[in-house]
Length: 408
Ligand SMILES: *Cc1c(COP(=O)(O)O)cnc(C)c1O
Image (cartoon, rainbow, N blue to C red; front, side, top):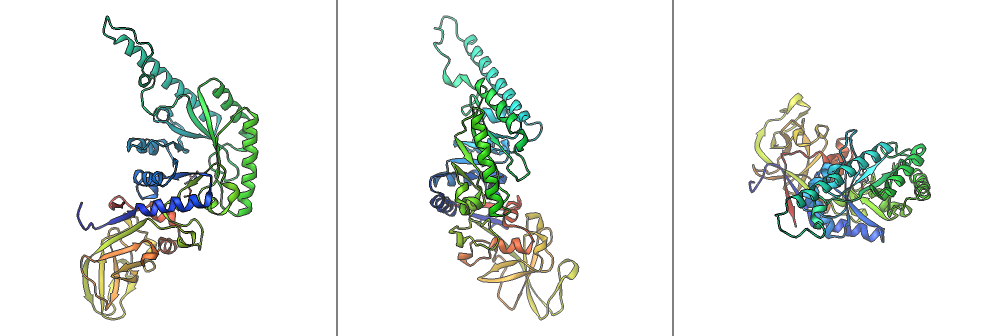
């Protein structure tokens, strides 16, 4: 770890805590699930999870079981929900690590049940081994120690599932025609003691408030049907950041806070500051070469930029291999020594150029691509606009060559 790394993402955990508190103040009684999938949206899953929990998040959300396991191995003990599983999903691991799984079909319920029976079978074998391995002459154990019942400290018996219903997004979740079958199978497996349905959830399209409210109505009818089938899910949730902030009716028992946790806005044209949020990540590179060139000098591949006057060019050690979108060429802003410039010429794999004109710049100077606009840095949304995408994509694509540093 060098003192001045070539590529640095600084993550302000105080901003993350602030964002959780800000959202909690808006959502009132609803619990907050910190969504830390995709490496905490590029910010570091475990570090963000710990900060969010400190500020009062009581749940962690991830896409797949492996991401949940990584959180457990990093020492996080809060309830975790994972909702995206491949066709060969092997739920044994989720059960052993005490990770709730979102299930969308009868087939997934049956897969969880099979895994629960295998895990329970292993626990019995472990118990038998413990008895068989007892030194002769010792007293028979009155009851096997609790720790012998299951292989892992976190293992959940019965297995914990949350049923995902599709209320109109068209991604995963059981479609309405399958609700009866899914709820019936879940109730049967729950009655058999194999699994427990602790929650029911769905996800919104954010197409419009009207569309979201229509999904809410469908979701309420799904919850009613689930109860009619004998299920009693305690955790009922629908809203991600956007609806949590804007559609009070959707808050229910828990909101799944993703982008807002990182201090970024889920709404087009609405800034972080307008939502009372603080962007947590500052992304920077460094000037690695400086040169003075004559007018009409071509800059970078394809000469998509030429200097108009004698100019100072600063070379920055960041490129598209680091997740810096090539579409930002000749469009996206960078902060150097207190001023904002535009990337000049094509962004290459490892480097890009900034025409500084006659401004002073030295090798080693910091080049901030984005951070908190309140500190004078460009907003991540300016990069998103330059790259014709959304803030989510910019931060989640930050590459592995970046060093991440955390401000407590
Ligand atoms: C990613 C995700 C979220 C978080 O969404 P944000 O818009 O980032 O708050 C919530 N729920 C589900 C199911 C998700 O996949």
